[in-house]
Length: 410
Image (cartoon, rainbow, N blue to C red; front, side, top):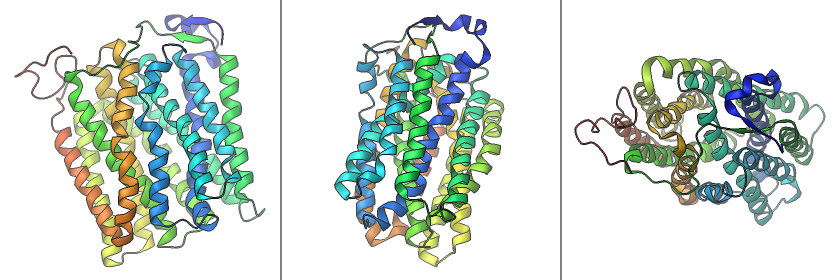
């Protein structure tokens, strides 16, 4: 990747070496490691390390610390090309995932999780920036939907292999983690060697950017991070702790979820394009509030496993509408702000993620239902914020108040 190539001349390259192809390849490689880690995690930590609700909360708090420090991407892109940083981060994610089962203690799992999380969060920060820089604004919602579908397809393949082989060949956690993480690492190395460094037409600001006119985007990111953590940490944990799911059963649920999302993600992208970011996010947050209340009902009223599994799938469908938050920012942002703001937004997204999992882990020991009721309240607050998005966001029209009280440029 020693050569630099202007983004405007990308059509001169073979299709397999173009920027969009690289985005699809990265979108497929990352979930293989991360989704396999997630699918096995709850069973691995319960069966091997004897985790309880408090331990899993601390694990996810540690996992989110690198997300809180994603702002460090700004410093790194001063000395490293953004595309290179993304692929090196992807490589770190793959290697750390491959080594996960080598450290089957609380301290070991927390340490290797921290390393894989650095790779994951720095990759995601850079990947979001590259997507918004490389994709045309008119095509972005649909293309983001297809990128989500590509990631879902790769994850589905990983899940199918786990379901078909876990019991049949009596696989070990170590073997599965080694294969999945190794695959992601190999793809990252290939991309580092095979693709030129693409140069976007708008140079990125190489310093921290905090603009008052982006305040609504920051607020939505904060609430998204807080709300999402509750689901990521406790929904899957509930399936194992309350309903006794085994590895192949958890993976089968994930697989069903992925099939549905492969079909739904492109449709969600089209929905954002047709109905706008405001309506898409309103629909998402109303749906999420109902999903979390229903999760609370599972514990309060003893509702069964079928409902829990259904809610898990519905939540992911709704979450795919979060791409509207990306395109909302793309429409209101100065082109040079995309990379530094992606880093700032990732940090804001993870402020609550650093303390919520550990704190709610203790609440979980007292009342799991209250954890999900709290998440429903967060979804309602996000809904209130989404109502402030104008129907046609653009620079100078970032919120419904912008026309009445124009915000300063900074």
